[in-house]
Each structure stands twice: as C-alpha cells, then as structure tokens.
Length: 570
Picture 1 (cartoon, rainbow, N blue to C red):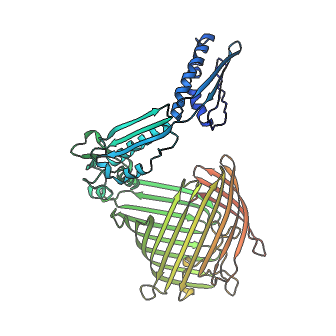
Picture 2 (tube, helix red, strand yellow; picture 1 turned 30 degrees about the vertical axis):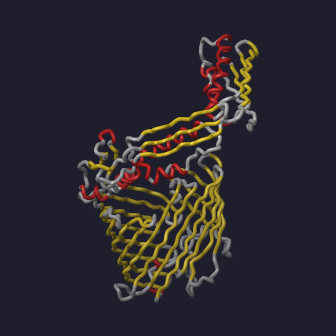
Picture 3 (cartoon, one colour; picture 1 turned 120 degrees about the horizontal axis):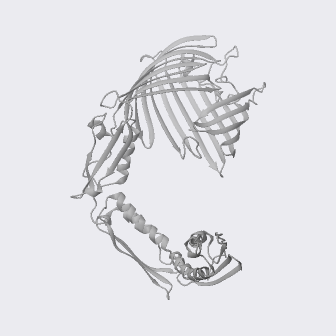
C-alpha cells in the first residue's frame, strides 16, 4: 500500500515543457525531475515533437530506475504526453510506488585491528540499517561512508570493504545486506617534522599533544594544528599526515609554519554612556625570545578613567599550566561616587581544568581613594582564583550560548595587608534564540564581601550598581548604600539581573524591550531598584550596537537614562 500523499511538481523549460509527477514524496520531487532526460535536454536546439515523444517514453524507465534508490523496485508508471499547442507540451507521470523493499538480513562486521576498536564497535551497535526496516540506498551508502571516514580518522589507511553489496529479491520484496570492513593494521604516529621558526623546538614540542609511536588519531592532529594557530606566533599553520610515504606501520607528520609579524600595534576610539568618549593604544611583541615570551603594553583613556598596564607572558604548555605571566597597572578613576588612584603589581597563571578556563593570581594593590567624605589609602596582598566558561554558536552575534564565571579573592591583615577581606563574585549571561529573528537575553551578577574594616576597603573592591551593564536608567555606579549625607559609598553585597527580548525586524536592524533589577547592599533585606526600557539594535561588522532608553521606575524621581554599548554579545 502506498502511504504517500500525491504531490505535483511543475518544471518550466525553454520549450515550454511542463512535467507533472503524482504519487511521490515532496522531498524527492526536485531530485527526480532533475534526473529526467526530458528535463535535462530541454534546451536542446534539436528538440521537436518526435524527440519530445522519445524522451517522454524514456522517462518511464528512468523513473523506475530512480525510485529503486528509495527502496521501490516494482513501481507502476502511467505516462501521458499532451501537446497543448505548438511548442507547448504537458508530460504527466502518475506513479504507484507499490510495496517497499524490506531489509531481511544484515551481515555487518569489522575485521582487522579495528575489530577491538571501541569507535568501530560503537558504529556497529548504532547502524541505521535494521532488519524489518524500509531499505533505501542512501542510508546504505551513508553507512559505508561512515566506516571509511572513521577509518581515515583512526589511522586504518590500508582498510577496504571485504564485502559491500545489497541483494534484492524483488518477488519477496526483501533485501539482504553484506557490509564487512577489513581495516587491516592501524598506523601509528611517526616523527613530527617541525621547521626552523621564531620559537625553539622545546616550545613546539610542548604544544604537541602527539607522542610518536601512539595510535594515529586525527583529532590529536587537529589539536596540534589548533594549538599552533592559537599560540599567536604563526599567521598560517599546516599539519598533515603524510599517508603517501607511510611505512613500518607509521605515518610521519609534516608541519609548515608561517610566522606572524613580531610587533603588533592597535588603536581604537569609541563611546560608552558609562565611560564617555574613550580611546585605547596598544603594542605587543609577539615573541620576545625563542622561548615564546610575549610583552604587551596597553593604555585606555576615557572621560572617567585612565589605565596604563604592561603584561609579560611566558608559555608553559604543560599538562598543568598553559601560561605564567607578570603584570602591572596604574589606574585613576573619577566617578560620581568616588575618586581613586591605584597601582598594582602581580603574577598569574592560566590553565584549562574540567573544561573551564582557570586563572590563579596574586597581586599587591595600593589604592588611595575618596568616597563621599571618607579618604583613605590601603595596601593589600590579594591572592585570587577565577573560573570562566564561554560557549556560543557565534561570539559576535550569539543565537545560542552563554558565559559563566566565578571569582574568589581575599587578603589577610598583617600579611602585607592593612585589612582582612574575602570576596566572591558570580556572573552569568545566557542567550537563547527562537524563530528566525528573536532572542531572549538574560544576565545576572551576585557578589558578597566579608571585611573587618569597611572604611578601609578600596572603592574598586566595593559594590555599586547602575549603568550600561548593570541597571539601566540609573547613572554609572550611582546605586548602593548611602551614608548620613545621602551619598553613595558602596556596599558589601551585590545582586543585579536583567531580562531582555529582542526582535530583528529588517536584515540587521531590530529592537528590544527589557527590565533590569537589583542593587548593591549592606544587608540582603535592603530594597531593590528596577527599571524598564526599550532599545534599537544594529548588527554592525564590529558587533552589535545597542542604543537603549531606560526609566528607573523604582525611584520616585523616575530617572531616564540613555545607554550606548558597542561590542560582541559575550
């Protein structure tokens, strides 16, 4: 019994030949029409009534042959050709698919070294071909390709199918499948040939996840290529398995590298509602020496802050630590709630742990600050550790993705520190697209501080709320606990969040509505502030440009704020 609903497709040609198919699935129609000679030869200058009739008769056998690909070996085709007027023909094909071919028997196996390879065992256990299923050649061919692809990825370069055939019993409407892959031996990684380049062989070997003599694995070769490319030393990278010269069960790896320019310069200008006009200048020496050390210097100037910093990185590329570095920064900031001047010197390391980016650090901070009528200067030795994880389908304009981070830091009075404190900050942002042009964007930040003398805690370590990435509608860092003069002095705790709906109307232009909420506190029972707003969105080449107008509806003065942010989502 045919279970498909009739479907018609019309293909116009230069000779005004129209083709009508009935009785097949919609998904097949375009492929089948394109395979018909009467459609492929429509532009032939020799096309006349006799040739159209010949091609029409030929189409019947072509249809029967093409339908075998979908598992129908005994279809009936009723064909009718009508010349509606001069040089206009209508070719109709009414198809009765008949009964599909059913898989009666499957002989699927792996021989050779791959017989005990878990990757091949998995593919055998999850074959898309099952006894009793409707047979189609596409699934059969895809299964063969899966075997060959896995063999190439796992180093079975001499493998071949010992048996790959389908026997169709048309009378019984059954198919018997034989699919036996003989992998033969599995090759091992041979020697890796690195060219002479700007960094030494020890560093190149440290970036290599491959040990000569271990079983070949294309994923490790890809990791090697990515490590070299992401190191920043090279503009182009090629790492290939030389299968054409394999011998003695080994395949050598050839690597070619094209160095980046040694010096990199950067400059930028911009505007943010929180910072006002801003600019940045930067310089980096990508490889100070053959051990791959890097030095970078960056300055950032805005209407509220000046920052100048230097960073010296030393790659380790060990199993435990990727990078160790030393940095220093001078910062001067003047906001509506505080003024501060600080200098920091520290060291840090980076590594990947459990799929998270881990950064451990220790820095010495000296900060002089004025908050309201309080002035102080505090020195702290601050160890800290941070974990961060980002996932996204596109980091510039994310349809599905997010970022989560956790930061822990503190100091102990008497150990090069004037006070004791401990602090935790958790940040999260999640973006979920739906439909073709809609997104829901949520974010939250929660922080808490324990300190033995809050008046000596630097303003850079206190919590404030308000601004572009906090609670829109309120000015930058204008929210938080107040002193007796009703002046904001910052808080021990922070909890802010946002929910936003965005819709792109025309190409790269869209709009958003949102609500932000939260505050900086000294007690979790303190009231929260909240705002609502609307915004315009433009997907520019440098990232999303956001222009928002928000109203702080929790404040009796109902403040309005204009907020402009440029940059990627995550």
